[in-house]
Structures are given as C-alpha cells and as structure tokens.
Length: 596
Ligand code: GTP
Picture (cartoon, rainbow, N blue to C red):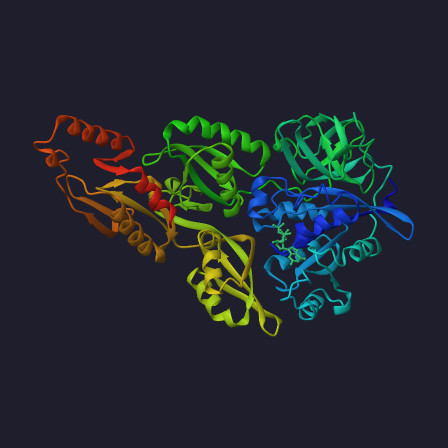
C-alpha cells in the first residue's frame, strides 16, 4: 500500500470517557462492522475487560474511509487505559502519527488525560482534541472545549464535538483524521524494521504479534529476527485486522498489522522490540525497548494447600499471555506453599488474581503487597528486597525506596483534603495549577509504598469521587524504614511481617495485633500477640485462656452425639494452622490479610 493513503492513530482518554464506545461507532461508520455484528465494545475481547469496563490489551483495526473520492486506510490502535500499563500505552502511541485526545464533555480533563497527552507529545504525535458524550444533559461542551483548547494551545472552535452513543460527529471526525494526521514516512527499500506494540497469546494460533512497519517490507514465509535477542522465527502468517484477522501478501512502510510465527510465549515476542528480516537485517533497532519492571510484589497462596500444583500450572499458563508477570515459589509457615509474584501495579495484581480464581477455579489468599527496597547492611552488602522475609536482621546502613510522581486533578474545594492525605502519606508537593477557575491539578512526589494500598480509595472518598489520579515511577529515595514482625506466643508469623516507615511501625503493630486478637479463638493457655522491631516489642495484646471441653455439654447424652461432636472438632482441626503451640484457623489469617 502507498503510505500516502495511510493514517495511523490512537484514542487517548481518561478511563470511562468513552474510548471503546467511540471506537465501536467508527467501526460501524466505516462499514467494518455491520450493526448486526456489533457487539458492545467489539474491541474488548476478554471477559474481564468487558465486565470491568477496562481495556487491558491493545488491538489494531484497519478501516477504509473515503474523502473526496480518494480511498484511505485508517489504522486505529487501541491503547490500554490504566496507569499500570504505561509502557504498553507508550509503545502503542509510538506506532501512530496522531492521537484523538478524547474528553468527556461532562467531566473535563482528568489525570490520565494529561498523562496520556504528555506521552503523545513525547512521541511527537498530531493531537486532535475531541469532546465526547455531548448528548448528555450534564454536558458542558463550551466550558470544557475552552479547558482543552488552553491545554494544548488551539482555539476552542478547533475542538471537535461527538457522541459515541448517538454517533453524532463521528463522520466529521473521520474526515478530520485524514485531513490532519500526517501520512507515515519510512524508507521502502531499507532493511525491514517493524515495532512490536502488542503481543497476545492465543490458545489455537500461539502468539499473535501486532506490529507497525517503519522501513522496508515484511512478507509471508520469510524468516524474521527479534533485534533484542537475535532469536529467529519463521513467519507463518502476516495480515491486517479488519475487524477479524485477514492474511495479506505483506506489510509495507507505515502499515499496521499482525504476524504469527508459532512461538508459544509472549516473552519471545516482546512489546517494544524491533522485528527485522533474517537475511537482510537492519543494523539499528528502533529504540524505546524496555523490559517490563514489576513494581509491586505479593505472595499468592492456595487456600487449600493441595491446590498448589494447580496454582503452579495456572501461573505457567498465564505467563504465556503476560510478559510482565514474574513469580517464584515461596513457603510461609502460616500459609504453606505458594508463590511470590511481581506485578506492574495493583490493578495488574488484581487482574492476575481474578484470572487465577475465575479461569482456573482457584481460591487464593494474597499477602499485603509491597514494593522493592534497595537495602545496604552495615557490612556494605547491598540487596534488593521484595519480601519482608528477605529484610536483613542486623544493623542497616541505608534503605532506598521507589518514588512516584503523582498528578491529581480535582475540584478546587478539595485542595485541603487532598493535601492532608498526601502529607499523611509522606508526600512532597511539587506544584499546583488551575485548569479552570474551579478545577486544579496538584503534583506530588510520594513513596510508591504509600500509594499501593488504599491511597486511591481514600482519595476518592475524601473528594466525593471527583478526584482523578495518575502516577509514574520517579526514581528512588533514602528512607527510614523498619521491618515490623508479628509474634504469637513468641513465634514469628511470617505472613504478617511488613516493611513500614519508622513513624508508622507503631500504628501497624497496634492495628495488626488488635485484629488478630479479635480473629484468633481462645486457646487452653494464654496467648500473647506482639508486634516487634527486631527484639524490641512495640505493641502487645493478649488472648485469655479457656478450658474448652466439648464433651462437657453431653454428660448423660447418647454416645452417637458425642462421636459427632468429636468428628466435627477433628474436621475443624484440618483447617487449623499451628504457630508454635497456637492453633489458628486459616480464616483468621485470611481475614487479617484481606481487610487491611
Ligand atoms: P476504557 O476503555 O476502559 O478506558 O473506558 P472507555 O473510555 O472506553 O469508556 P467506555 O467506552 O467503556 O464508556 C464508558 C461509559 O460511558 C459507558 O457506560 C458508555 O456507555 C458511556 N458512554 C460512552 N460514550 C458515550 C456518549 O457519547 N454518550 C453517553 N451518554 N454515554 C457514553
């Protein structure tokens, strides 16, 4: 295809501003999908995505569109909408020349609108500002057109107004894409170079890799090479998606499509890597490749210990589809055998956990998430700690923790509440700007560890749901951190150890010991519950002793009733874990870990 007739674009938006709905309308308007075939949100293939209403995996669709009798091919690249997947978003953007900056006409600019806009600007994309949902009674397009125009430096009249629901304005938008977004440029006779912007495991076909060709040509049956690893694969199929995969005779400069090589693991076909041909290889890759960096770690344990092999198989399968997921076996005295897993962020953790439970039928318990710490002990030995159990016991010279740069957008009336929250989370205010007279953008630098728990929930509840949050990794900083252990009758319960800031150690200790006192049944003897930093006890609770004689009620009763009671007690024991001499029902561990 002549690159002159190609337009590659993506839609960037804050979550729920209507990206998928608008994409659906464009598929309809261009005739790629007939109304009868139209499922709601055609592009969101996975069940979980549909149920949660979020897009995890991007896809690319080719749509024909005619302007003044000239046929064009528009490639729409769908980007994941959540902060955990920023790197994937940035690669999708790098595959485009233009971006529709979509903003809900009843909400205005939100944190991820900005984050995505900055990514698009870094990639030098042409930005088309679009207000969506103009059909809503609460829409205020004039106000938000001005906000948007101020942000990107255009006139308010240049902001398009559409409704993904009614289809209003969609055809005009397609015309504007052709008019405003530049055609791709590249060297047709140079060695092939294509960037991978997505890679999806399919149980029938193996890995389907989405690419954008920059230079040269990729054709069926040639041998290709992944430039980050030099691994070679046979190209079994190459084509475009419109809206189902259609094999083609190849992909040339500026084209977007998929390729299949028969590899079975997305790790062999990584997002951000450059594909070239084996016999006429490019010498320089396209750049921008990064290994996925897990930022949040948590232990996953089967509630039923005999499910451990199932969990291992399930993780092996999920890994084929998720290059960012890492895990290794872990044993916990309290929870038994499980895995220590690394995730891009909290949402990624939740998605993996949910898929394990839903697709593999596993009941799981996950330990409190923590981040990676760089710890140097008194002998100068450095280590990276992803699990409180790896925290050195002796004296520590320095600890560094990961930091994030946060952007929060909210109505101005909530500034005080937001500042209070961020301060309590050890945040440093970086700056504040008014987007319009009643809406502000606050920039904070915060420890990642402080936002991985319930930061977003707290932010929402303090701002009546009006605040939006985006964050990105922003280096590391030294901090005064300690490990708090929880002891039952002097025995450490590993699953409850936590790394916290020294000033927060006491409240963690009080909270955890108090919770466990409520959850652990009384035993035949007194059980002290303690929180400790090293050998220093910082909090203590007591479970008083009882004499529990289950048969006492049955004096004179018939023998079968006694036997039943004994059996019931035995069955109950199976779900007990022993910590030293203390019997703890597994539910107590689960309850203590879940509602942090
Ligand atoms: P992610 O893909 O998860 O980032 O969300 P999204 O931006 O794609 O949002 P989605 O298309 O799922 O739309 C979010 C909600 O807004 C849904 O309930 C849609 O039905 C609704 N919606 C989208 N576009 C319009 C519109 O033009 N008008 C109205 N009234 N509702 C809309």
